[in-house]
Image (cartoon, rainbow, N blue to C red; front, top):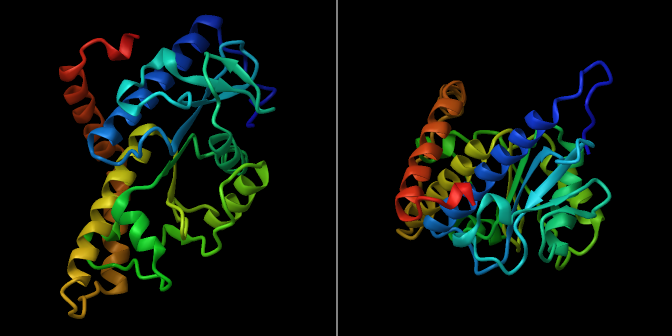
Length: 262
């Protein structure tokens, strides 16, 4: 996992505790919010987020205990796993696949505070096609211009750390990986951006699939306009992602006012 610079003064225990709790609140919101949008799958698939360890020793990878429904995620219910794959915070079953897929990506990408793995219906379906067809057909597509990669080689259920290393090499420095016959992977510096990307990638794939069903040729946006639209989106991504995240949080709090304090 990532280590702090030796020149950095250690945070106070209280600051570490607050930062850990804030990360837990954000990840619990992401779990519930993605379920609200219909992007969860039973009690499977997984979202992880790096946070300062409560022990003060490095970081932990936060994840949901296997078997807890995403709609019931709370900050305190989340598990914290150290850089040796050991459960050091929380109680519950640590899903092997979550650790196997996510650890390698977090290790390879210090900027990837969040790694979200979903089986979002339209995104997954588009990635199942033999031809890599995701293109620049709508302004929502353009927010992912040259920021996605493909994994054409499904190698079975992920049960070892080597799978995370393999996926990290495939995604490189990009935000999205279409995981072939499996699902999709998102990397982001914040839970808000990972959440926003997951939602809008699903919308982009849904719109493309609807258009493809007409059997007519799709009108692709030119490369220069796609690049311009991408940059325009990136310039305000934090603002829009944070507003989206806060909006879904308000909806969730209306349904369950106390969940972020649990």
